[in-house]
Length: 132
Image (cartoon, rainbow, N blue to C red; front, side):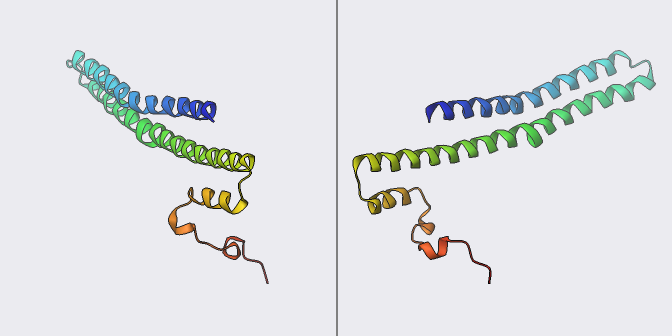
């Protein structure tokens, strides 16, 4: 379980780092565009393309971070937490079986992983509805 959690954490950190670095890279592009613009102030035709580079790099940095990298990092963290919970449930149930616990006791232990609103659902409600 630790190896899986560590592996997922590495993937999440990579996308988080991309999300953290992208706006900074956009700002660097903005500075480069502004330097180009200011160095050619005598040529009015070059001001537009230089300003375009300056503005687009900021936009691209923000978009990469907020539309791509950070949402992926958040989703990976969510999925890692879900998998950690499932693996914990499996470990707890196997330990209960190994200790020779009553299946009802194991069931009650595993119910603690569920939200309180779903703990008292009967088996009939859990099963999928059948077609008539």
